[in-house]
Image 1: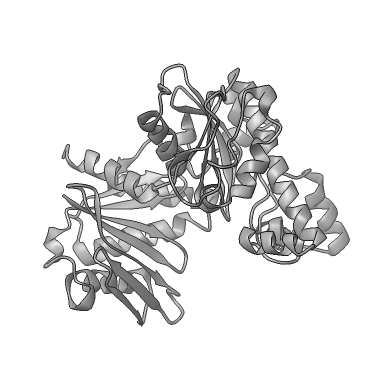
Image 2: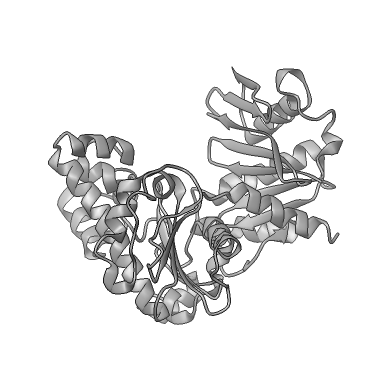
Length: 399
């Protein structure tokens, strides 16, 4: 079975074509600047690369072009589109309606559209991607939606409710939803495959750290708490997002700076975080270089990130009555040894002992704790596309 995995942004469409016989990536790429001028980059399993400008007025034209590259020319990996058996879509916000991956029907699509208010930057792009596939393939091509929020639907009320008047939950569904669920689910499941930790009676803290970051408490394989909330703005300091702050800061800034709700939202989402504190960059690699050169604000931003991760790891260990493993993933989690070391240093009281020599690497699947550490510490590269493809195969195989 060949499955095409799509991950749509407002002006982009990332894709991977996977042969599920051996779970091999045949080709992957990205259509960028949709609605502007358009460019596509395409790579095949055997190292061929294609990149060129193309007119992408909408996601439909971008999808048509990626299909053309998959089936013809320098980037060809299949002979005909009929070889594609199903499409797996990264669908971001499933609200309370979706606690798992589902076949996308007209009813599911309508519900997903209705949830756009909860994720105005993400859900509309997903809708466009679903419709683009229908425009090209027709309604007969099975599509499966894999929701970022689904993994967190196992949280208990005490974890997901906010202490606001209950009527706002009833009227507007204001609550903690959590995001990066596909990544948290993948790495926690992978941990059970490669370690001696069994899912039953397990307590795991998964740290997805990148430009967007979140931490989850996973008990017996199910999420019981997570750091992102009603939106992906909550929780840790991130690349350009402020993370958790005193809510009164919002009203204070609106008054002092004369900002509208949209303007203060832009400040918190796009001008804050590592960028806002450091004044250097939203990229942790740039901050590490600036900090090493003595930039005090870059040092502060790095220290804030390390401290907040450590604090949440401790909080989730307390919430679960202990912890058996800590997992690092995402661009920062997989590649930044300094972050991993800073988070795990002085955690012996919790049973965490990291081996600096084992930790000195980038981007591999590896245990970095000492043999006598009571808590295992792992680096597990995430693979959300593979999980989306697996879910799609499972659902489509039952049709």
